[in-house]
Length: 117
Image (tube, rainbow, N blue to C red; front, side):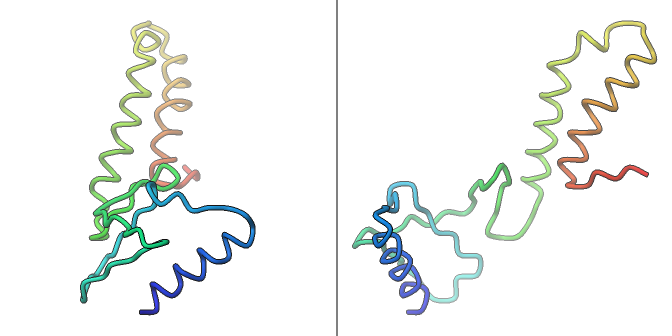
């Protein structure tokens, strides 16, 4: 199998540099499994997962992003709730600046865009 051969080759190259792959932490995610696949590193079978988090991004095997959007919204909500005492004041200008700094930055980061013009 080609995929297993690639994993074996990566494992060999890693050993050449005196490094190891943490097999307990290594997972495999297959988006469209046509044939049953069992991938191994050093005779240890890799765990199949339905989703994984990579660089703070939720990657799901069915290519739907609803969970990612919910996760980003929850992060923005948590950041907003940390600053609720700021928004209980009567300073309108301060509220607008704080909204721009806190809420829009988090929302734009979640949408991966930074241009608001």
